[in-house]
Every structure is written in structure tokens, then in C-alpha cells.
Amino acid sequence: MTDSSATPAVRMTGIAKRFAAVQAVAQADLSVQPGEIHALCGENGAGKSTLMKILCGMNGCDDGRIEVHGQDVTGWSTARAIAAGVGMVHQHFMLVPTLTVAENVVLGREPLRHGLLDLEKAVADVEQLCKQTGLSVPARALVAELSVGQAQRVEILKVLHRGARVLLLDEPTAVLSPPEVVELWKVLRTLRGSGTTILLVTHKLDEVMELTDRITVMRQGRTVAVLQTPETTPEILAEAMVGREVDLRVQHAKRAGSRGDVVLQLRDLRVAGRRIAEAIRGISLDVRAGEILGIAGVEGNGQAELLEALTGLRPVLSGEISLNGKNINALTPRARGDAGLSHIPEDRHERGLILEFSVADNLVLGQQHHFGSKGLLDRRAIDAHAQAAIAAWDIRPPDPQAPVRTLSGGNQQKVVIAREMARDFSVLIAAQPTRGVDVGAIEFIHDRLRQARDAGKAVLLVSAELREILTLSDRIAVLYGGQLVAVLPRDACSEAILGGYMTGLGSTTEAA
Image (cartoon, rainbow, N blue to C red; front, top):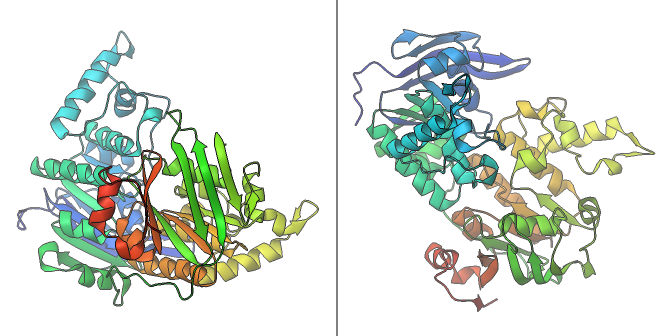
């Protein structure tokens, strides 16, 4: 339990920040006690990440005061923040993939011997830090060879190696599998026990309720509530974030009509892995019009390779992929899109957006040939398309010409989904569609996916969130070790049943 009478580790009062015409933060307040895990919550675009960047010196503020351990640090630089023990782990990793774990951790503070990097000292220092924190990761491994969860640990080790006693985490579980989340929580509790102050930005209400001591809620750039976690509920928190009641129950809305014809068919599909000979080992599956088929599984069991094969980003070793009765194995990603396959990628930065492009241009990315002729783009048509998408999806700020990198992560995700659902598609592959999205936007996206299904579209949903799979799917297939170990009707599924198959405890079943 933290001491409420102690000088706050962080105190921000009256913080304001404007970017051109956008008021990102307006009179926001934040107080975090030493040795507590404090959540900062709010809708996409509420100003949370901007407030964190101001605190760690990446952005200045237009107004307000910042104190760290009682010292006025308003307007300080990133270097001063790091020197004072404030470190931020960003939602999208900032590692050098061609360097080892140890080299990444000590980068900028390298131990030297005869003027050169003392690699053995770096490895020893990192291994010792791993033991102290419980952040287990091989110090000599290349970052490019790590899992996402291991890369997340390296980011945290990097900050702790620089002496951080105030740790800022922006959506730390957005790309982690459930077991990796459990491991991260153990580490954060250990760090709290050693006196580290942790400020956590997240949209996942169950994580907030399980892990944190207090919660600050922002809405439209302002602080609207400070809650004691043991005294609140997910429903109260969601209403504070969104400004209205939000139904958080896991409710499966059944499809309006019956399933139609098979529109996506996989037959004995085999796909090479990134590090293994076969990541997908003989999958056969039918996806029908008018249904949402969910793919459940712990990340790393072939989901990424399956998605890449379906969308034309990875060749198949053998087997067949058919779309509307036609073999598409040899088609390019663009040709597959024109044939009726739409794709919401699991990593919006790697595969979904060009960050320096405008919102308008990202909304037609991959479809430019439909917005012009003879090699010339029709800017008027692109801008009109953007205005309609921005209004329909409540993309903030509502500026078609804003670089998409200036949007919050959740609003960037809306751009991707708006673009892919605007296609004339018969099959939508939705990979982690609500990753990094607030509770109000999750409701909206789920409703749009159901509308697509009820309009006769087929949706193949891949999600690390079991609640999302259970909420949306009509049938659920479980992927384990590159094989389908179960295909079940939704009514026969629960988290416990799916969890058994996901960990390899179930037997191969075809029940739907």
C-alpha cells in the first residue's frame, strides 16, 4: 500500500498542449505516489500518450507545471528525464534488430575497454539485471530472433539499465499473448515491491482492475476522474472513460440468417515458418458467407504464417487456397483484394499504414488504382472518400490531410479498418481488429463486423483476446502447433474449453 501523505513521485497540474489546430491536452492533472502502479485510462485521442511524452521530455507543454519527486522539471529534455530516473517504454518498440539483447540494452551507455565496447561486461551486466528483475531474456541473442514478449522485456530492461525509478508503459500488452501478459504482470509487481513507480497506459479494463492501485481517467484532453481501484468496477471505469454506459458483458449476437456458400476454402495447406520448416501443417477449413469464424490460439502457433499465406505475403509449400471457388495461390496481394479479399493486418505500423502519409492517402492505400486513371490520382475523389470515412468511423482529429503518425494508436487502427471495410469484399480477414482500441471503439468495431456478417460477408477473425473470439464468432477453430485441433460451434465453447485446446490438452475434433 502506498503512502498517500508522501511527496508524489509525479505531479502534473494544469497541463495543456496544442498541435496546430488540435488541442491534444487541455488542463490535465496527474498525481502518482511513489511505489504504486497507477493506470492512465481514456478513449483513443483523449491525450494519454501526449501527457506521457510531456512527462518524459519528448514534448514540451504550452501551460502547466511538472514535478518529479517534488522538483519542478517543467520543460525538461528527454536526457534530463532519463538522468532523473524517468523512463518510457513505447507501444511500438524502438530496438535495433541487428544488435544483440545486451547491445540494445547498453546502447548509449556502453561499457568500454581500451576505447571499444566491452561485450562481456555488457552481457554480464544485462544477465545480472535479468536476475534482479525477473525479466528473463537471452543476453547474447539477436533482437530479430526474439518473440514479441521477449522484445517487450528488452525495452523494459533498457529503461531500467538507465536507472529508471519511474517507469512509463504505453499499452504494454497490446502485442503480447496471454501467457506473456501474465509474466509481465509478475515482473511489474516485483518492480513495485522494490520501490519502482509504474504509470500504465492501457485500454484493457481487466488488466487495470487486476494490477493497479489507482486510476486517472482522461476525456477530450482533460482529467475527469481519479479512482481507487479497489473501490471501483469495470462498468464505472468504462463510463468515466467514454461518458456513457458501456455494456461489458460477453454476449454473442447470433447471425440474422443462415450460413451461405463456402467463399474461402483451405485444402491441406502447408506453409513454411519464419524459423521452422512448417508453421502450418496440413490445414483444411471452410469459411462460409454470413458467418464469423474465429481462430483462437496462443500467439506463435502459426497464426502469422497463416495470415501471410492467405493474403499473398508468403508462398504456400503445398495445398490450395480458394476464394469464391477460384484458386488464388498465385495471385498477388493486390489481385486478391480485387478478387474480394480484404485484410485488417495484426500490426498496423508494419503492414497497415505509411505513417508519413496523410489520413486521406492511407484510406486508399493499396486501392489507389480505383481512385484515378492513366497513372494520375483523383485528389477530389480521395478527399471525398476520406471525409466520408472520417465521419463514419469518428476518426480524430477529423482532418484528412493530417499525417497519420500524429493520430493516437486507436485512431490509426480506425483508419485501417475503415479502409478495409470500404472495399467491395466477400471475405474479410480481421487480425487483432481491436488491438490498442478503447472500450467505446471496441463496441463500434464489433458492431461493424456483425453487420458485415449479416450482410452475407464472411469474416475470418484472428484474435489473442478470448473474450473477443467468444463475443463475435459463430464457429471457433483452435490453432495449436500449426494444426487445427478443434473446430466447434460457438455454443459448445467457453474460455476453459478453448484454453484446453490452446495449450494442447484437447484432442483433434471436428464438430461443425
